[in-house]
Image 1 (tube, rainbow, N blue to C red):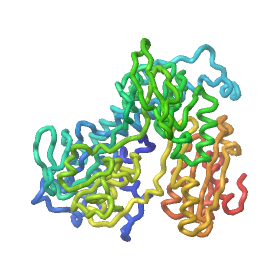
Image 2 (tube, rainbow, N blue to C red):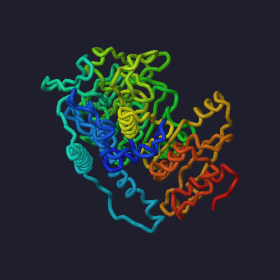
Image 3 (cartoon, one colour):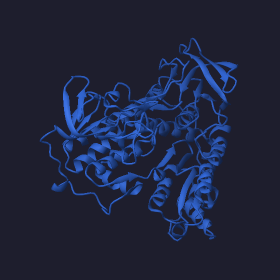
Image 4 (tube, rainbow, N blue to C red):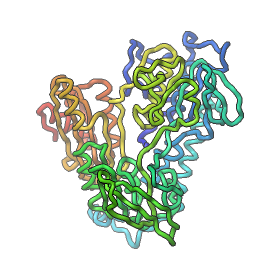
Length: 527
């Protein structure tokens, strides 16, 4: 999942302000120019538009809004998918499912409720279709808001999918064949779920995140292939609604991309005490769909190293959560001399497209943002990249600082992070010649967390001992996704742990978990 996290592009008024917190600029300009600035207007005498954006997910939407903010005539080729993966099949509807199932989990937790003096009589019931409709309606509403914001700001929304023709500055509407021209083109095609060889998807009993979000039924036993963000979030949904879950992970450890210490905490809090088991170091080599209530899904597993058969299981459903691949097929990239690597388009730090990853030349006036460029598969990263591309188009040199972009997994409790894992920090410190420092805060010592009955979890701050600057922060605990923003801002601004230790945090709030970690880094105590 890319499945994401917070979506700044949904708030048109805040798009300009968002970039300053996650990016560094190579000029002395501290604010974006006013939309009335005639100095930034580009001549459209030769072209239909100043900027054409191919794709209308969060990245394309953010790019288009900022282009209009710079008085650039702008077209967006939506491909019938305003909002893209995030709004229609990812971040937004998945958060709706998590919110609803989370309420069910909370109300079923008798011990937790009784500790607060609350008793709920009778069995907790839920309406599966009602939960599914909640997700669908939320996505539909936000999609409408996105499209209205584009139209309201004067963007031309082309319904067809945009493809390159092979000629500079040209885009073809695939549905009508009409050719449009633009001085600059921003590619924002997004991504699609990756389905491994041997896995047959029917989007009914064997499905990707696209099918899972429809919540057509709640299986008694579901296998989730892959244990990253997407798989972990859906295990949270399914177990709250009564399913048993089996993770199938090809790598030796669950949650392989997570910080190891956080992953161990997550295994204890999100897996061990729930009806979840797992297989690691195995491939789901063959997955055959079934029929709900009649025929099970069959999953044949082989050893990831030896490729020998190790086990076959029969489950009610299987979810394929093995990552995503760029949606760049048949876009005309080859006609422009652009080579892709597994579908990814190579770009430089200014989001300019390169002819190839190693030693490639810049393709003039073509940019690529979001999931398709392999920098970072997050909706808000795509939005930041889109804004950055427009900054470079209007002549203000700009590069996104990806180390300062936060991410979150919206389980109960949540997991959030910014910057490298501790393992990556150790390698980086050794390579660059600085000393790594580490300090932790605990939710068990936090008054607000204890008041909520949510004392599990930690916040880990990793910093450069030589400069004092925060390098990374990893959190698992209640509302971790909200807490991480303070840390992302600190990384972006180059704030030191000494400076952070002297900043006052509201009492009693969850953010005091971070205050404890910041103070601990400089030898201070927090109450």
